[in-house]
Amino acid sequence: DQQVKQNSPSLSVQEGRISILNCDYTNSMFDYFLWYKKYPAEGPTFLISISSIKDKNEDGRFTVFLNKSAKHLSLHIVPSQPGDSAVYFCAASVEYGNKLVFGAGTILRVKS
Amino acid sequence: KAGVTQTPRYLIKTRGQQVTLSCSPISGHRSVSWYQQTPGQGLQFLFEYFSETQRNKGNFPGRFSGRQFSNSRSEMNVSTLELGDSALYLCASSLRSQGITEAFFGQGTRLTVV
Image (tube, rainbow over all chains, first blue to last red):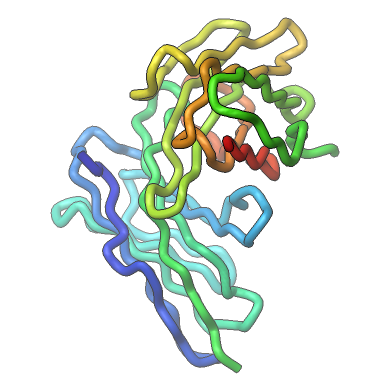
């Protein structure tokens, strides 16, 4: 039972445009959400997070939106750059412990 | 400061053998978690250790075990290896266990079982 789902295996975007990566979850106990970026042969790198008490968090070109009623979050990258090409993982957790539940990932390709 | 260090980076083992992977967390981090990444499955949580105690465990068979030492370094052991155990094993460390902080990942150990 996949509690965190990233339904788009891949996304291709033109440089300078917006990239929108989506994530859905089923467990209403999740109260903290994170996005990680992963290049081949490297470990995932933390990008941005959001607590369930917020609906938006921004950090530079990255913004995460959380819609708790829809159990949906999205990562917006504006403007997209070729260096953003990587696999993006959505992850969720409950407050206790550090067990992160990850989605399967979305491959983002930014074309120049 | 130094990041999370995993050794070895690559490993080839034969079915039926056992393997031990090592993870040194960021200095000061007391929580260490292990994940398995396979194509199409994303990252699957194996277990988490905090102050030498296993706090959380994922849905993996008993062949997968781990431990944490007093200096927070952690090892993961897989016994009676199967072909399906071929994967990238990632270790993550974080500052505290109660309440979520960002987990920082190592580069992983690529295990191939032949």
